[in-house]
Length: 226
Image (tube, rainbow, N blue to C red; front, side, top):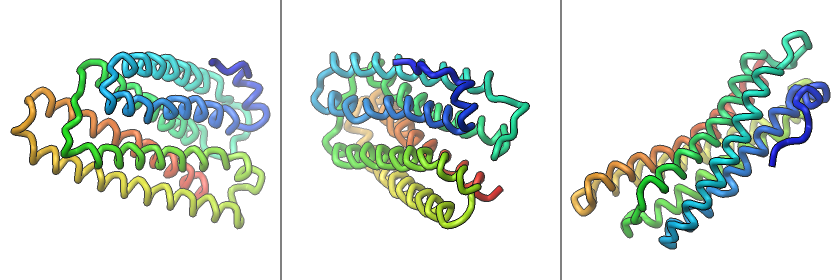
């Protein structure tokens, strides 16, 4: 569902309103993340394809908002943060949706069979990635309150702690991905070569979702430091 609020009206209220609107659309992509893998685990390729199609449409909506933000972000009004930094934040948010779409693309390009040896860690990686994103979303939802206090004071410290927690979650998720790759390497000879390539690619792309979520937090730390 497309936003019905013109971007310029969002900017008039706050330069962060449109950023939050974009992140909420990205959240709709993430809402399909676990169901996509649940369908994979259940070997329901038809449902995988349907969810992938839904993700593609949501990602297109996120792209539309991102492009609109780039075109309509005012140059003439005072912004509490550098315009370039705001655009980088939007790009990082959009990259989350891009990575989810890439993951869906992998799962429809090839019917993946999940090796039993990596199943538990894969589920752990998926949940860790979701947790990392959800923490990034919570940070973005605090932008208006940060603006009200001038990016300072106790509220700023609270948001900083939230970002630190986000980064710690991403680090744990990254460790899970490394262990997953290690186990995959140990069973390579039991899998078809093409399947191995696709699994490494899939694990890397899942990690990218968490990485971009962490980068969103890093941009907020930059705002707080300015």
